[in-house]
Length: 292
Image (cartoon, rainbow, N blue to C red; front, side):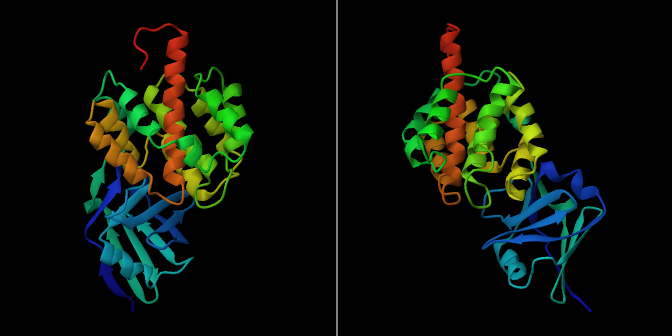
């Protein structure tokens, strides 16, 4: 008989709310040093510590309980989802996650931006410029990579065909759970979702998803972003910058993001910076009085 351990305390992205109400059987999809993922059909859920940033498609639990699970869980272990409760079977133990009782964290970009009807991005741009992202990011491996990014910094996208030129080049480029090229495209896409001026970039991303030519983790970051949800640290950054937050506050959030992965945070920040530059350049070319 399985010994049952109930994981009573947790938080969850509100992006998962509808999915967690389904009844499904899945399995442990991937194991990392301090987190793991579960997959049900095409849905991935990331389970990490409450001391870590909350993923757009994640939930988080107390760190000691997470360590206890990671000590016994294996790839392919069966996971049931029933009425908002996750049941994980691992080496004679049953771990119960009553997610209906977990605090829901709103990671929706649109909801964040409703609080800032007239955002200004100059402070965020200035802070990002301090980190020389074009040099520090792993996205740029050659002069052609650099030229494409510098082009994007000088304009906004005018068509799906134009968006595809950049997306097809950076999509899935690099190594790791989230290749650098994907991180860059997701960062750029976050700001397109914020600007809400055109859907060309998002339409092109949706078309690229059909090809399934990148990692599962990247794919789910794309999917959640296209649905309007991003990971907590980036929402915190965008919220602080768009609502006129203090320069020191924005700098602290950027420093935290820069620690993500090997270069994942840097690569995503470069995408954010590129999108802001493009919006600013487009406004200048149109002779608008308020640039950004």
